[in-house]
Amino acid sequence: MQEIVNNINSYIWSDYLIYLCLGTGVFFSILTRFVQVRQFREMIRLLLSGKSSEKGISPFQALAVSLSGRVGTGNIAGVAAAIGFGGPGAVFWMWVVAFLGAATAYIESTNAQIYKEEEDGIYRGGPAYYIEKALGQKWYAWIFALSTILACGVLLPVVQSNGIGDAMVNVFGSGGSVSSFMGDLPLTKVYTATFIVLLLGFIIFGGVKRIARFTQVVVPFMALAYIIIACTIIGLHIDQLPNIFMLIISDAFTPMAGMGAAIGWGVKRGVYSNEAGQGTGPHAAAAAEVEHPAQQGLVQAFSVYIDTLFVCTATAFMILITNSYNVMPEGATSFVVQNLAEDVVINGPAFTQIAVESVLTGFGNPFIAIALFFFAFTTVLAYYFIAENNVSYINKTIKMPVLKFVLKVILMSAVFYGTVAEPSAAWGMGDIGVGLMAWLNIFAIIAIFFMAKPAIKALKDYERQQKDGVKNYTFDPKALGIEKADFWEDRINNSK
Image 1 (cartoon, one colour):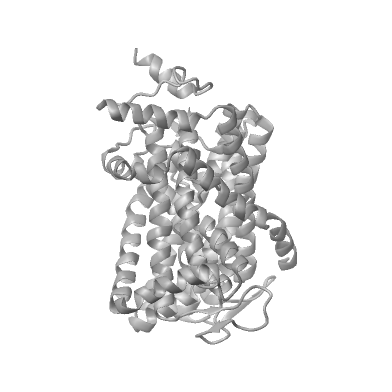
Image 2 (spheres, rainbow, N blue to C red):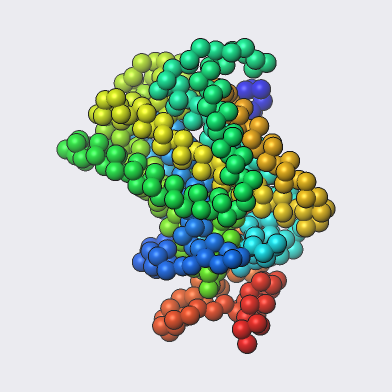
């Protein structure tokens, strides 16, 4: 199984995808005139001013749902893996992919708002919807929808729950073992898996609104608590911070693990964490109630900053500033850097737990386990939300309501498996899911740009209204030459 997963990943996560992610970010940053910088203040304003409706969630709730998908195991265990396999310089490339990816996030999320639909009294949308409407390629939309159901319903939840299971073992030990068809499993992981599945079932059977309410409370609180702990540790070692910056930057170009490893792992874990270009964020963006599609595009661009430039950077600084890491490139037989015991797992939360524990003795291990539980659990909820959106898209054609129930059962089974599985197998499956979606979505948003430029037209229209000082923004797709934006056409017609 592990060999099959590795072989698939060698094709999906080739250098082509890594440079495609970076190149797409550069492309859209230039075309939007670096909207991620110019509209930074507007992003903050929109977060604080939006409201929800019976049909749609608020921009802040959409951000929370989106962040719950972005802020997860990748921010704790993923950063550790990037450093462990790619060296400290991988952090620099995570910053690069986040800064450039914010423009990509704007494009994909604005597209999702433009081409969203109202179904069963709520807003739905995402890449499958804008691929069908903007490209006119329903077969491609179906391929994306099915790939996303596989990725978000099976492959990606495995990684998130695996991080929780490993963190709990680091805190409580294995607790004995039980025999199964998967071999001997630690009882701690089995108990953790059972608890997660029960809680997950309670929430996902409650619908999208319950997911939004849960994430808008949990995600900001846990992210803030995590940042405070990180700032405390960094503050206690503030004299070392300039050296850490220099280490990251110098290692990014002359890295101890090889430049290709630093770029590759930085981009791979950066995309895994902030999801810019992957096509997950647009699903939450489409569900938001906004006056103009560009507004949610800007909010989603800001979420990339929160995820990588805040949370991932906090993790990286804690690990590097306390020397709580080893570096061993994939395929190597010896460590390039060894600060910890050789049996410390790189593909897991151990580096981060050791970093916090080294400063806050007796607190680090349980705190990171709790933080990882909430980050990873809310990410699984976001994955369900995304997978359900794509099941709804498919149901428009085949009309099989039972598919949503089947999705819930499969997702809960995947979460149980992921909690008790080995980290290498779990992360390999997750990488397949991320890469598969990224290939399909990035090609789609580039093709849509060349065919219709909807997100660019929306940005110019929004900035024109900003300049005119309007109080209530409007969006008329027909006037901008955007076709098949049925939801917005109906809204503008009903307002006349």
